[in-house]
Image 1 (spheres, helix red, strand yellow):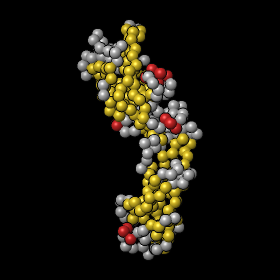
Image 2 (cartoon, one colour):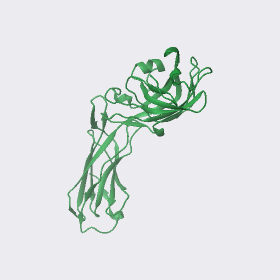
Image 3 (cartoon, rainbow, N blue to C red):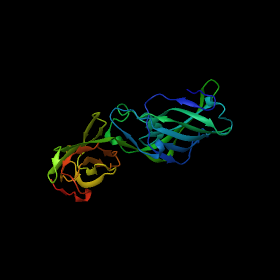
Image 4 (cartoon, helix red, strand yellow):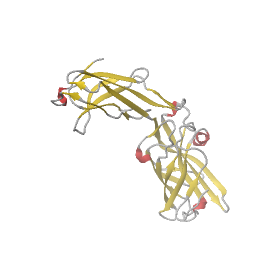
Length: 284
């Protein structure tokens, strides 16, 4: 379905999704349509949780074959999509992630620059944690005549790939509060990430996580210690109280998992003084 005065607008059924890339030109031999200049999500991976739908932006260029013009938005469809599998056509039928709605502005009689969004629904389209990987990039081009009569359709590929990651989150608790200067402070927390099978957040095991501190009145956090999460994603470290300030956990992320930073937990230290270099940590 298409409409519009200055460009094409396409609406395709089904749930959709993508991530970030800049891709080279792909040629659709059967239609003569070229899809190029594909940029998804500003070049960043898409990080997806358990319930929130993601709609990353996507831009691309369409070049039409001789005999077709961008002045007739009903004469063509062309858009990229993500897929698994051996071929784009099979991939789109087996959980592929498509464009939803896009608009195109004519740059010439046969060239249009298009923009729109993809649709990532973790509940319906990401049904395995193995989906946290690099997805292949395909495209579909279609030509129409008369009353939306399909005369040619082509599924092709674009080199490169798009990374989809599992959303992660961290919590923190520093105690006791308040604490006397020189006494121990125990900082605990959890690191969890989206499980697309259970539709819940589950613990991340054996992750390297940084314990960070920001002294009162300052803007920057400093890493005090690095620990590894337990088999259930639990975090724990003990440090010596020297300054008033905020404690937090920071996880840089993996290729399959987005990074996570907890909120800060403020601890008041009675008799606090000196500066952050006086702090030291000990094993727990």
